[in-house]
Length: 80
Image (cartoon, rainbow, N blue to C red; front, side, top):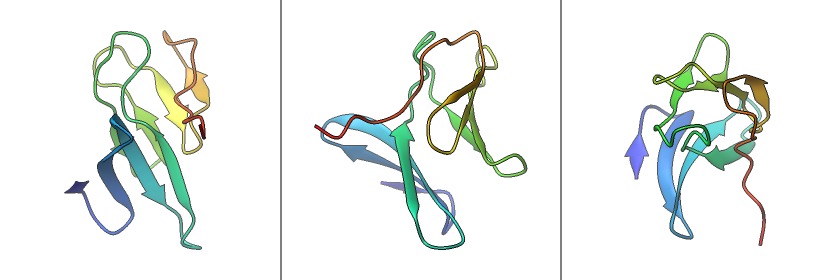
């Protein structure tokens, strides 16, 4: 597990690399940490509270919804 600080960490869950953002109320927002566009690792943007792709600038909100592309797919984790 990689901790960036108390509010952001990267962790393998069920074999998937996940990004976890913990909000001010202690709720965990868990998403895939891999951009669906070209499979780059996402980084957390502390200013905008988004997951951003450093390769081609796709952006996702803390719940995994696409904000801007080129990715057209969300990074939500399916609870299987």
